[in-house]
Length: 92
Image 1 (cartoon, rainbow, N blue to C red):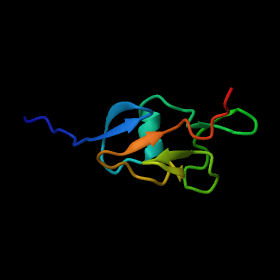
Image 2: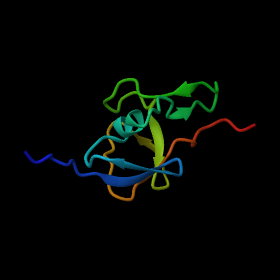
Image 3: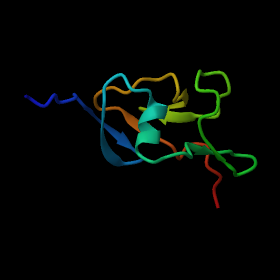
Image 4: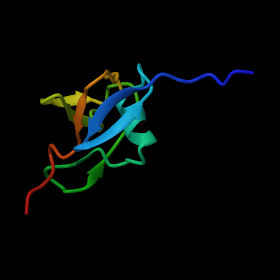
């Protein structure tokens, strides 16, 4: 019996390379990599992550390929994508 291989695409998450199944949401990709905190609220400084999972609440916003405020729960990964979760973090 031949083992079935699942195709993967290469993405960069906060400067680190990852191999993710194509068509996976950015949120699922981040969760798969052990990331629950997608950004830091610029006002309160609290960690934010997925909440509604359908693009309504905006808690999972990340920067994708230089585009800020992309909802990770509705954006799909693609080959070569760069995902940055540091946008919105409160500086020192």
